[in-house]
Length: 257
Ligand code: ADP
Ligand code: MG
Image 1 (cartoon, rainbow, N blue to C red):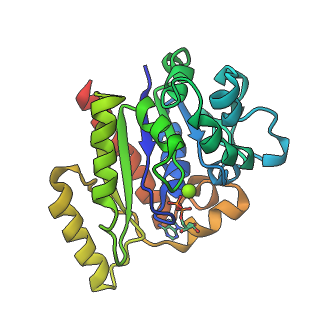
Image 2 (cartoon, rainbow, N blue to C red):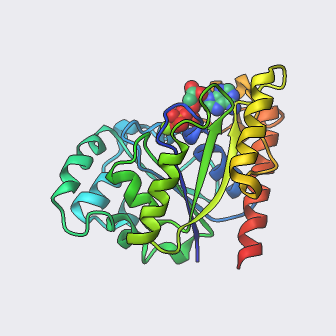
């Protein structure tokens, strides 16, 4: 039975998609069967894993809005063991279309019911908002993984995010747990990065991953080649760290079972 992890933070540019692409490909590289669901209309996880958005016939939009069985949307990626439910710009309309739909926060959860047993991990890349697509993701998930960028205002918006988690726990998904916080774009040369790490550790105490993702130019180049970091530059610091993160995620999943 897959563990379902939503990668969420309503701030844009904090490393959600980079983490979705590279955590899911590193989990697959470690031999796990993985499905990544791109639920951001920008579709950057889709293209980041080498899927051409022009060739998508069915996407996560059809799953959520048209009740298309999710297995009909799944595509292979450039990594063995890693499938994707892709997204494209059509999904931008879903936030509005969902408003009047029955069971509007539960649609992704229902869609995953039958395929959950086929995978070890399902990773969901959320859009940068706390709208209905993110609520669908949190309702469908066992845990939320929050990337935090080591930058000014890193903690801004986190109380709103944690409040949303509480509301989801109360009304939609009592089982939802915080998987952990991953610090991204860390620059060891700046005091600021070091301060952010300290503050985040104070705020989240034992929920912060030991692995900290450094700012690494290879990580930012890889998406333009449609490759995850382990295929683009397996020897880079970025690849090393995302493998370490995958190991922590596996360790935690096995501990909890
Ligand atoms: P989000 O999905 O939260 O909006 P992204 O993962 O798309 O964030 O990252 C925003 C930008 O920062 C992208 O251009 C991405 O390539 C770059 N980026 C993300 N993580 C790193 C990193 N560790 N080092 C360097 N660049 C990064
Ligand atoms: Mg993104």
